[in-house]
Image (cartoon, rainbow, N blue to C red; front, side, top):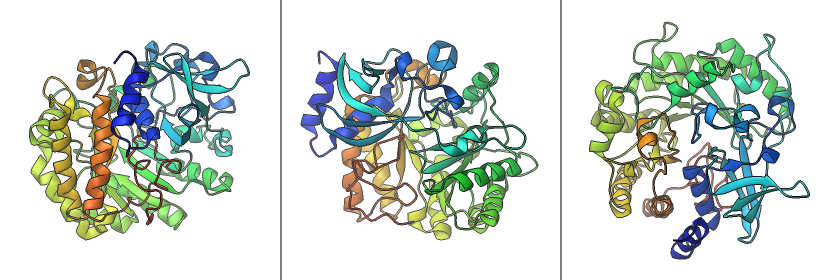
Length: 439
């Protein structure tokens, strides 16, 4: 292929059942986008909602390498519409890459657009600064620091523990930069609270609830690093669970409560349910047995792949299969030097995992791998996985769902190209727009 445009257009032609919007979205998620200074935000003092770095960096460079984008943050997300491909409304999480062939810039009239190979391919919308971001907690902390929202305001992302106790080369997941992201924000002098106080979380949610008059925020996710011992005297289930308990007591029924945690034993999972959590995300990360052991050494050491899967199945007895939604990191299957060498092999492996879970009524979801440069896999694979892998995965994902008669998972907003708000992969964009959404 002579250009990025030629590659993208070739894939759109070869896979016509995958929405064209999803092809561009996956390419932006896997490879990032550059920002002209005219497209950067004025941080929390401006009119555009800035990128919050809510858990990982999701950038293709460290903060010092991002230039002006490190000082004036890019927007949290962008919306693509129109252009020569007549794109329907597509929400894309921002992953900064100064060397990307994609660039967001303002034209001579100040109108933002997305450019590929120098050609304007879409209009770009940016999220307006929400009213609740303009207010601070009593101690001066910003709502964006304590309770940022993503997915165009749909999801409140509560990273209540911003480091992971899987630490060092022998334990950290090889694609994950949660610990580095913590370090770089602290080194830059940015506020980045390690363990969020439950009262601060409740105060931030009160501000969101008060000023989110349109009730755009529909769900919250409790998440953070794995806990192998204790944090603040609590084990993992009790640590994350006690936030849910406090939220549900203060705001009963206001939001769909979700928790991302390890695959825990069934009694611990029951504690999540008892605390008021509605959806459980025990992420399985990568399906292949060999790659799981290599890429997730801490999870293999403390739990083990087979036990991880058993616990996922056991958790359906607590939450019901529809409400157990494990994530995997789409693309690491092809990470050199250990990953699959061909797209065919990688898709076959991932589809085997999808069929395993979906045959039990569980609908996994995925995040498109961003090869952050401070991670072992990102350092070795700066280009990530081939775009063809991501497009074929969307095709395989939808087909597997149809094979087992499943519909879009709850807690992710509406499905379908032009409707979806889930911003870190295109799986919701690629599902039928008329799929019933259950909550």
